[in-house]
Image (cartoon, rainbow, N blue to C red):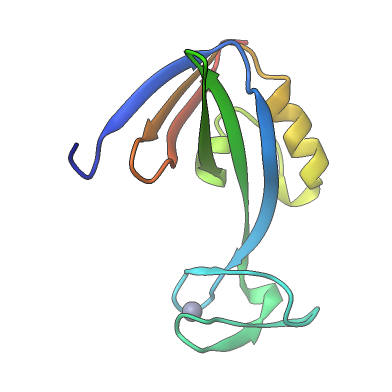
Length: 126
Ligand SMILES: [Zn+2]
C-alpha cells in the first residue's frame, strides 16, 4: 500500500456521525487551532503566535462512520468537501444541524485516502 491510496465507496447513507467539530485556522500559519483559550484571543501551538479570533477563518469538520460490506469505516471530512453537499453559510449552522444534513443525504459516493481516512470527495445523488 503506498502513501496515497484512494478508495471510492458508494453507500445509501451515512451510518452515524461521530462528531461535528468547529475549529479555527491560525492567522499566521493556517494550521488548526482548537478553541478554548478565551472568547476573543487564541494561541497557536504550532507557531506560538497569539491572535484575535476575529482575524481567523473558521472551519467545520465532521467525523463520519460508513457501513461498507459489513465493516465500519471512520472518516474525517473537512469543510471543503462538506460544502459540496451542504449549501449555505457554515458559520450559521450549528453542529447538530450539520450532522442532520449529512445524515439525510442519500446515495453517497465517497472518495477517501485509505491511510489518512480523510475524505477527498463527497457527492450525493439527490
Ligand atoms: Zn500558527
